[in-house]
Length: 147
Image 1 (spheres, rainbow, N blue to C red):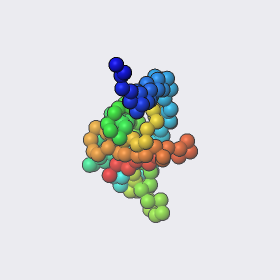
Image 2 (image 1 turned 60 degrees about the vertical axis):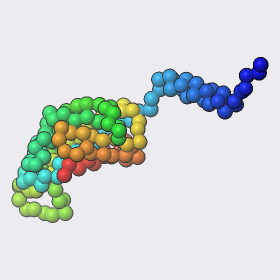
Image 3 (image 1 turned 180 degrees about the vertical axis):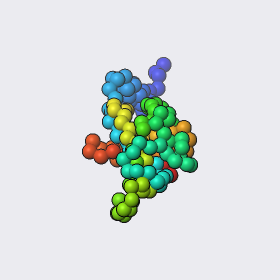
Image 4 (image 1 turned 135 degrees about the vertical axis):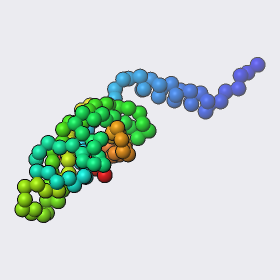
């Protein structure tokens, strides 16, 4: 008795086996992710002073937990936010006073993150801050605005 053969099935099994072998190589492309978390609170501060998010963004502060995730919610890294620095909310205006409307900016560096198409930074509260891998550059950090 002859066993019927299905070339597509055999080819499919070989393809699955090859994909499995490639997946076992252990090499994962990584990227260095540089973020600028900008809290658009427009709080009146002296430019350059240490800051945290003002109401309603008080959950964005030094030591607050964050998670970097893939777009489907897989955790890639966890950490704590650094202290922020106050920056002029509208540099086109010469306020002519020491205390001006500001935004609070926190720089977050995440080296050697697994490469994905899209990411999201999840804070303890608020909506996830999403960004595409195409924005990642060694020259400029990615600006994520909390608002």
